[in-house]
Image (cartoon, rainbow, N blue to C red; front, side, top):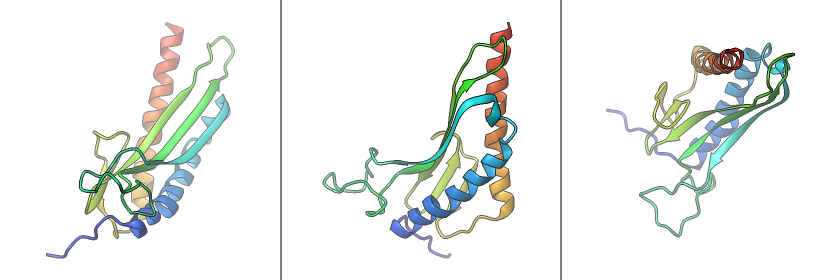
Amino acid sequence: MQERHIRDKQAIQQLYNTTLAELAQQIHQNLAAVIPLFNDFGLERIIDTWTKDPAAGSAVEVSIENGNVQQVGLRLRLEGFQRAGAEAFDVTKDLLFKLERNFYIVGPDKNINWLEKDYLQRWDKSEYEQIAGKWSEELIDEITQRLDNLTQ
């Protein structure tokens, strides 16, 4: 059996700089019709520098540089929904990469697993489309539900 690559600086940088950037681009394309409905839009990469690695000493700072970050991801902010007759509202949604020792899990939160990959395993186009599509679909469903609640 082939040994899996362990989470390190290089693996985290690859996810943060390349994979998240590509996913953000795909999500942005998927939401092109939704974004103009809001006053403000933000889609940014996030890093959890608060959660300590249980296997690391407490003196080690959590950072990409140290290769001990537990989560990275994307955070979308849509602020000030604008439509005549509807009350304005904001939407925030995350896409998280939970970084385990030998693999990572992608999902909308820490508890839902949409995809599991080894660190050095490349993403193919269909995986970007699948994850971005599923995430965008959930976001649109959430916005639709908010609108339904406003009109009831």
